[in-house]
Image (tube, rainbow over all chains, first blue to last red):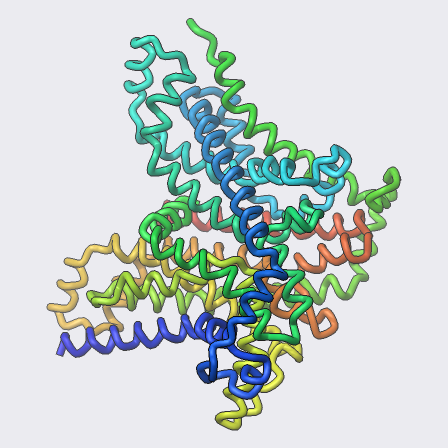
Length: 272
Length: 287
């Protein structure tokens, strides 16, 4: 009796999973159809595999350069966020003072501010400094991403004994050496979590880059996709091929790093 | 006695503090000032008092967007939490496919809202239409062409995406449950529903609070999915607050006026967050 119950639960789970995958499946199979085939048989498998959609979409999306832009902005921003947030959290957690408390409070309070509430003056202010470019967006990502990252590192530091710092000081390390050689390596699991959370956010971000990155040759995937989709909205086979090209690398990455990703999300959401 | 704040302290905090000020605090303070001016993005702003805010009270599109957003948030919270909890209950059973199912349900969260909205635009317009032809259901035709189908389209998209995220939160709490308690209840003859109702649900109340507020703030700030699925159409009737602010600022170039909307938006979101903190604190005391 109990055995049967488990099989029913398993069957329900699998049916739900197929339902969850259906949009991806429909996108994928229709990306291989000709315009006529897609129009006549949206739900069937393609009659013949029509690869031209992908070559046209790859060309229109300038796919290699666009991916390169996304990778560049994401990797540089994430490295900067992980390093500087760990550094700031280290200073704030190890030095107990009114200033540290105030700064930590300000970082956490800034998480309450929705992006839409600052975006208009943000564009005006950074535009005046001539910083609406890739260098600018990386600094903005540090500003918007450091709050949650510092909060997570601050929590992790609570679990790292202060006697480590003292031992390092006795051995002649200054504070920078203590951080870089002892504390930062100890926080590696949290660094992975912080890196994953920020990567998912920055890789997929559309609104901020749309306001900051103006030159077509520096556009990221979401930006390029927006213009591409607008241009080919009546040619679903092309549009879907473009979407498939953008999604497949993410899904491959997910299947390789899913353990770390799920753990990172759990830590991030339970603490946030 | 050494000084508390040495040069290292200031060097270590400087990059994050400077970036935070430049990205959030300076624009925020300027934003409050701009909302009382006639700033258009180019000329020097002049103080005009509360004109933007009084204008705001007669802006029916803004209130329609706010109402649409509130309705959407309410329905989404219910739907996402029910589906998310159901998924969590399924994958925490002793089934073989447990970790595979988690992977699948969570997958949409790794892909940007903009791209997910485009995929669903295809599903609603082409695939729904094709299924409608197949089974002869006219209710599946012409999705996203009306306000109602646009609304439900957004609800379906967000439920599909966020349920897997909320599932992760419920899983974390479900797996911390004491299974001896459940087995003892089973021995005493408790059925599945009785176990859920009297043991599982009371113990995961904290997860429930976190999830409700997370879906609330996610739904309220929604922009990408709104842009790519309906773009606010037909006739701005599915335009949510975030898009209304964006369009006022960058579509109509009324920067100061849009900023006054952004300030109202900030106040609403802050009140919701403070209520969350209050409810969370109260639960901690009761627990």
